[in-house]
Amino acid sequence: MIALDGLVAVVYVAILLLLSALVVFLAVGVVVVLRRPNRIVAVYFTATPVLFLVGYLLTHAFNNPDFILITAAVMLLFNSAFLPYTKKHLKRA
Image (cartoon, rainbow, N blue to C red; front, side, top):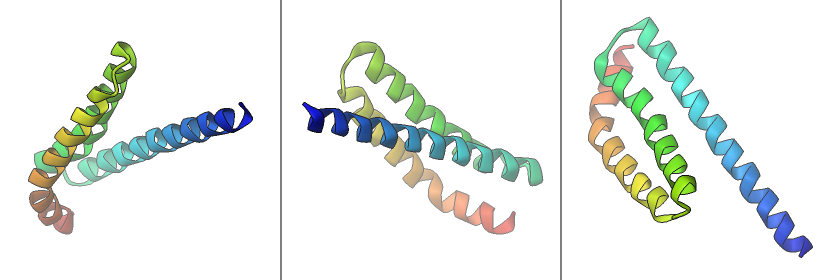
């Protein structure tokens, strides 16, 4: 029972670290957009955390882990589609 409690604590800490990383990612996006307004960078930096948070909330709302897997797949497709454009625009910023 103690081992299971330890595992739950590790999972909660990992989730908190992931959520804090998403907040930092969003903050970096806001700073970049404020320095050099650019729609592609704005969409990339704001949509990625929002997509994850929507999937996370759906997972807990419906108690179905498939939502987070679907969200991860959508985020992967979204990020791979935007990455070449974002790299180019971030070099200019």
